[in-house]
Length: 628
Ligand SMILES: [Zn+2]
Image (tube, rainbow, N blue to C red; front, top):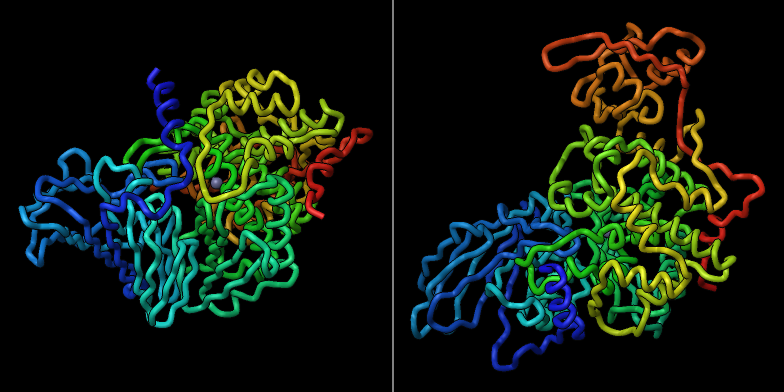
C-alpha cells in the first residue's frame, strides 16, 4: 500500500520536464565555490553561501547517490566544517540520529550563511574504490562538496557553481555555461539535480575528441584525462568505433534525452576504477593503458557503452523506487535487473555492434558470464530479485569469499541473460520481424529533448513487451526474478542457436583477466579461484574442492608435494584426468598447515559457446549493426 502510494506521488512529481536553471527568481542561487588546487593531496575545499533568514536552519549532505542506488554519500570524508555569518563563527550541531544532517540557528539580521567544508577524496566520492584524485588527475562529484536545505526537492534548489583548478589543468564536464578565467571556471546556475548529475574531470594530460560531425546535433564529445600523455593515443579504429557507438544508439532508440553528451573517460592506475551514469555524461575510469593494451581493451570494452546506454535505460526511464525527490529519500532497488540487467545486455551488444568487441569476444564474454552464474550455489536460497533489493548490503562487501553461496550483484549479469532470453523469444515468435530493438525504441525512445525522468513499474515493462510481441511476459519474468533453482537462465543462448560448453581451451576473457588482475581461475573444474599469492578467493559449494573441505581465506602452498604455481596446478589437473589418484593440495589455514585431497578427474574446463547444428544463428542476427 505504501509502495503504491509512493508510485503515484512520484509519478506526478517527476513527469515534469527537467528543471530549468532559473528556479524561483525571488531566491538567489546558493553559491558554491570549490577549490580543487589541493587535489594532488586528495582534499577538496568548498565554500557555500546560502541566502537565509533568521531562525533554525537544517542543512543535509547528500546521502542516497543516484547510480549507486544506496546511502553511499561519503559522509566520513566530510571534514573541516565551519559556519559563519558576516565573518562571525556560528555554532553548528550534527543531528544525533541522522548523521547526514546539521542544525544551525541563524541570528536576526543575517541574510547569507557561509559554510566551509572539505571533502577527503582518498576514498572515491563516486562510490567506487580508491582515490578520486592523484598528482595529475581529479574527478569531482559535486554531491561530495555540498550541503542543501533539508526537505527541499533537488529540482527546486538552484546553485551557482565554480571551481578553481590546479594550475594549468584542463577539464571536461556536461555542466553548461563554462567561463574560464585563468584557473577559475564559473558555470551557469543549475538545479541541484543537474549539478549532482554533472561530474567534472580534470587533469594535466587531457584530450577532447568530438565524435559527431560538424553541425550535427546533439553534440557528442569524449573528454579524456590520463596518467600520462601517451595513454591518450586513441587508434583510428577506436575513434571509428566510438563514432559508431553514437550512431548505433541513434538507430536503436531513435531519440536522445540530453542537450549534449560528454563521455568523461579517465585512463588511470592511480585513481579508483568505476563507471557512473548520468543523463548527459558518463564518468568512467579504466586502467591506464586501456587504449593501448589489447587485453585491457577487450576487458573494458563494455563499460563505456554500458554507461552510455544508461542515459536511456536508468536515467530517462527509471524504476519508480529509484526516482526520489532529493538525496535523503531512500531508494528501492527491486527493478535493478531492468535498470542494470538490461543495460548490461545492451552495453555488450552495442560494444559489438560498434566494433569495440568482435563477435567471438562477445560470445566468450557471454560464455564466461553464463558459466559463472551457472555455478552460483546461492541461487538455491536467494532469488535474483533479492540481490537487487539488497544492493545496499551487497555493494558494501569488499570480498569475494563465499560469493557463489551469498550471490553478489547478480542482477547485472543475470539480467543480461534474462534480456537475451526476452530478445530471443520476441524474435522467435515474430519470425524475426520484431526484436528487443523495437521494445527499446518504444520504451526508451519517444521525443528527443533535454533530460527528464519517466518512471516505470513492473507492469509497464510487461505492457510494453506485449506491445512488441504477445507472450505471458509477467509469468516468465516473475519466474526469472523470484524463483530459486539450480541453473542459470540459459534459454536465450539456446534459442539463439548456441550452447554453453566446457573445453580444455582457455576462455579468452577469463584468460585476459587472469593476466591483468593476477589471479588463477579453476572455478569450473576444481571449484575455486586463487589470488596472486595463492589465497582461495572463493570455493564453490558442491565442487570437488568443497567436498575436500577447502574454503575461502585459506592459502595454497603446494601441489602434489611441490611449491604451487598456476602452471603446476593446471598440469596437475591434466595429469589427474589420466589416473585415479586425488590431487594433493598443501594448504595454510591461519596457524595450521594441512594437506587436502581433491578427487577430481574431469580435466580442464573452460566455458565457450558452441553452435547448435541445424538451428538458426539468431545470436549473430542480434549482433548485426543497425546503423548504416
Ligand atoms: Zn550500470
